[in-house]
Amino acid sequence: EKGGYEHFMMKEIHEQPKAVKDTLNSYIKGEGEQKVIDLADVGLGEEEIKEIEQIYVVACGSAWHVGMASQYVIEDLADIPVRVELASEFRYRKLPVNGKGLVIIVSQSGETADSLEALRLAKQKGLKTLAIVNVVGSSIAREADHVMYTFAGPEIAVATTKAYSTQLICGYLLAVQFAKVRGLIDDEKYDYYLEELLALPEKIEKILSDKERIQWFASKFSNAHDIFFIGRGLDYAISLEGSLKMKEISYIHSEAYAAGELKHGTISLIENGTLLIGVLTQKQLYEKTVSNMTECKSRGAYLMGLTTYGHYEIEDHADFVVYIPKADEHFAGSLAVIPLQLLGYYTSVAKGLDVDKPRNLAKSVTVE
Ligand code: BG6
Image (cartoon, rainbow, N blue to C red; front, side, top):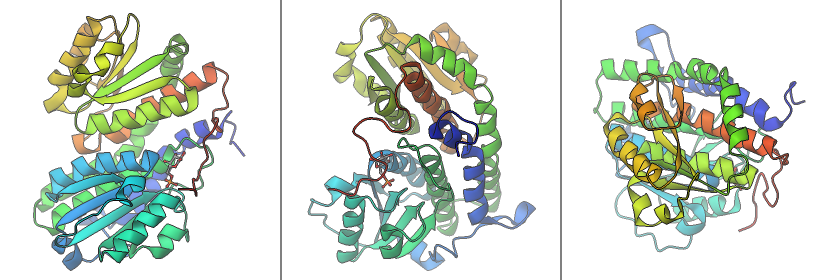
């Protein structure tokens, strides 16, 4: 049942190229330059898309991290203000509604209690709702106005990998389509984004083929007390997910920080040998984050850099570097997250922990 892998998590990590491809192929229709994103199954029409004035992405855990990443992509491409909310917080706020809003609920299981209640609240407030869900026929899928399924297949490991990756894809597809419908990108740019999206599965495959290097690195740091992940913009969103993967299955305390914020607090926790991982896929933010990394190095941190092939000058600063293939920067998170999933996985394995069923955690949380 684990397909020859030792754990479901590793099997599911390896299923990502296919899961991503299946999700892309479910919404991208047509051949060659005739390819288009088709949201007919989602039921989100052009008029409805044009009317959106504000988007809320509401979710828990890793699904909330998808919201954080989607926020950057939707705002950048489609120019619609996006707020990302934890479902357990969104539910208990006043939530003044001005104008036409779309609430996107992201949930693998479609049963998370807080996310379901947040959906109900949004509907009561008269907001349109769209659910990005993996489990067909789940409560959230049944109650939302629109459903965009992820095609990840069943996910068994508590720590999500392929569901997260397919949710990200849905976020990108919405961003690109919203941008197109609202007249913000021309056909050429649209085709380019579709090609970049369709190229992701192969690039994920390539990263997976080099996993032994991450395994080696994980074994070096499996006794760490704290690990820090930093990045700016989309790289911050990916840092959040990398940090959660690490702490939930390896039980090593870790934090994700917006790179510029570290010096306002957490830098005091950096000691000799503390591992600090800098995520560097956004060209415009690269230098700034590198300078935050070197600030930490001068306080004793051991630096791992995660960047794209070509940025070889990072080796002047970082002690260990992982390179990922180049992709359009909006979608680079889909690649950057893979080594971070592997790092969490191999650290947990090196410590002899129960990778698929970490203590105190459940796959689907139906209590509030
Ligand atoms: C959790 C899971 O507690 O619930 C996470 O351990 C998940 O992996 C979160 O991201 C939200 O679950 P769902 O099913 O709503 O995506």
